[in-house]
Amino acid sequence: MPKPTVAIVGRPNVGKSTIFNRIVGERVSIVEDIPGVTRDRIYSSGEWLTHEFNIIDTGGIDIGDEPFLSQIRQQAEIAIDEADVIVFLTNGRDGVTSADEEVAKILYRSKKPVVLAVNKIDNPEMREDIYDFYSLGFGEPFPISGAHGLGLGDLLDEVAKHFPKYEGEDYDEGVIRFSLIGRPNVGKSSLVNALLGEERVIVSDIEGTTRDAIDTPYRKDGQDYVIIDTAGMRKKGKVYESTEKYSVLRALKAIERSDVVLVVLDGEQGIIEQDKKIAGYAHQAGRAVVIVVNKWDAVEKDEKTMKEFEENIRAHFQFLDYAPIVFLSAKTKKRTHTLLPMIQAASESHNLRVQTNVLNDIIMDAVARNPTPMHNGKRLKIYYTTQVAVKPPTFVVFVNDPELLHFSYERFLINRIRDAFNFVGTPIKILARARD
Ligand code: GDP
Ligand code: GDP
Image (cartoon, rainbow, N blue to C red; front, side, top):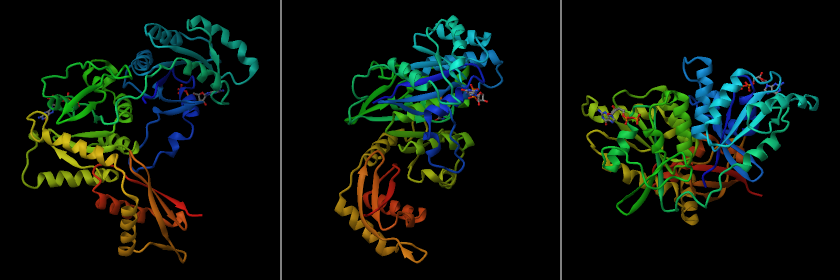
């Protein structure tokens, strides 16, 4: 089910990132650590009572060298474009400022619900200070204190009242949802066009349930696909769209709604730091991943070039060792026909459930070939393995002591499982549990 998105807007220093971190809680820090991949704290998921939602800290999206007012205006526009509900944050200690009024002006123009919060109301006596904020024209201001965690429950109650009502699931089970992510100009839109066999992306008839993203449904060889978030690729022209943080935000939103993520690289330009970051998000989300090297037509090559590029990718994206690599050209359409079968294979693997008895045979065979590690004179014993989830395939290994299952042995088991069942393009997770 698509989750609603909440965006926090407001001028600098009112406490946006403090509130964001409060709401996101532990989630940001439990994200797996990948060397070289930093998680931008601008987009994460939150929970309130029975509601799950995504939250954006628009303050984290810096718009290059734009002047101060232009920056906050654009952040407000991002909130309007991306969110279902907007939290307009102000600072009770400063009162209403002209910058707040600027933000308000932008938000008036939106049809999205806006909830006004007055932060830094650290104690009840200060509640008197909030009445001025009625003048902003967004109704009752909610007094909160990000520093002390006060008032957030009432604020989130109000926010949740405005969540859109969804009618069931996003798409049917059998539909493969995929997205193309990558920095600007690697050729994502061109590739979508090449796949669709049209000159340009035609606005599709089915509007995604997330309203702002217009998804493109697509059927090929009896398989239904939905290309997620092509709206983000098509809609060009706003200043903030070329900023890195904004493209990261779009990518994170698209990844979340996808089964398979295509990480698109520019073969002509090679790999840069931003590619690595974007690839890291796909991995962290646990989606199936296919790496696409586009613009291969423009690369001067000999018989070694492809192999060298592949080695380069493997060296830069070690965490994506499971992702197959496709070299193609959206321009000439060379090898674009190999992409959908690859997406299909990755999706099947992502969703694959294996037989428990076969699984246990494979684990026992693996242990026979490569004995379990010892630590302080104690040897890891594996009793039983079972698959507990798909998307991605997740296995619980019952052992004598979970501490003894080190990273390298876990890696070995994952690779054995991968080879034995021919998993393609999907991460595999192993959880160790002590048997009672
Ligand atoms: P942002 O620029 O809007 O993201 O603001 P920050 O979250 O970085 O906060 C700006 C400053 O206000 C920091 O020094 C925070 O510690 C402080 N701050 C945030 N929330 C509160 C609050 O509820 N009470 C007080 N007294 N200070 C706060
Ligand atoms: P996006 O920003 O990732 O959606 O990239 P676009 O699809 O807009 O493409 C950016 C530029 O790269 C455009 O000028 C395209 O014509 C060009 N381009 C896209 N794919 C290819 C390709 O396969 N080969 C070559 N030579 N150029 C390409």
